[in-house]
Length: 368
Ligand SMILES: *Cc1c(COP(=O)(O)O)cnc(C)c1O
Image 1 (cartoon, rainbow, N blue to C red):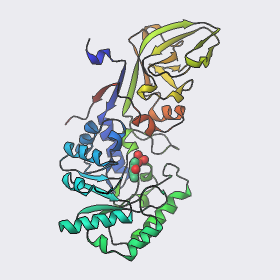
Image 2 (image 1 turned 60 degrees about the vertical axis):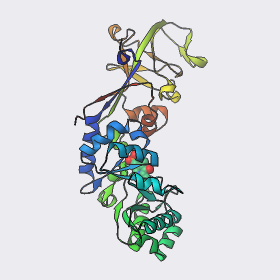
Image 3 (image 1 turned 45 degrees about the horizontal axis):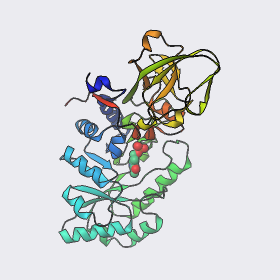
Image 4 (image 1 turned 135 degrees about the vertical axis):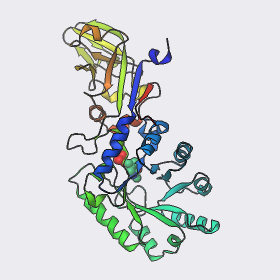
């Protein structure tokens, strides 16, 4: 038997849906250029497969978190512009040069280091300036921004490609934080030398044209996570996760299921054991809360998620669909990534980036 047919879980990644989502975000962003965030291996979906599809869909600028992610992306896309969000850490200038990466300068010190580097090479190299408008995570806060406004010599030595900032509450449409951050960003921009601006993440795009500026920086929406949680998802689903049934049991009361005996059987049930567990990123917090589907039939998780296995209630499913070797949907049309995340008490981002290395990955669509 071939390894794919042997595998106990299949993760199908729809590359056409990635391209469709990119196009949808382009229209939602008005005229703003859509850059793509492909950090963390394209949110767990495989940067090597996803990034070329985005490039063919028209994306020219990419954001990663780590220098090493940028280096990996450079080997895939010779001509793309690659921006590194975690910035210019001490001593990394040569890596940015060698792989033609663009640092997001997150502090006055990084601005200074990049300026010295430009000076040494006698070139105005590109960099982004990160203004912290309210995250207090990365970027230059009010005092550092003021210092930059007061002394602009360093900025004159480089080419500021984007003025960048990041929203803290973009998926909460009504949050006052959004307009507060927008105001702080606009105030800083007005006092610094003119540069293009890149502000909105996925959800930020849907806050309106004032948030889109010259370029936007979506990640999660490209991968199918709902950027507008208060309304139905406009994005196409990219991932489909199926787990294989390895055994079924008829269980009658009084019995329990799984570790800790956390689920008591109240009446006769048919239970299927599926070969996916928390070691695959199927979070333990889905114990007694997640839902699988056998075709269109709901099959709730009973008991705890174990390392390699889950147990689901397939009492309502047709017998022919629950024999060992058959697959059930763990992430699919009836239980999309946002629903799984909600059941697990987390966000779609964590579900995607946690997707396991043991799945057989099947990439469909996205042909060159
Ligand atoms: C991860 C990240 C993004 C992408 O955010 P999404 O919510 O996934 O669209 C954009 N900008 C920065 C600074 C990020 O860290």
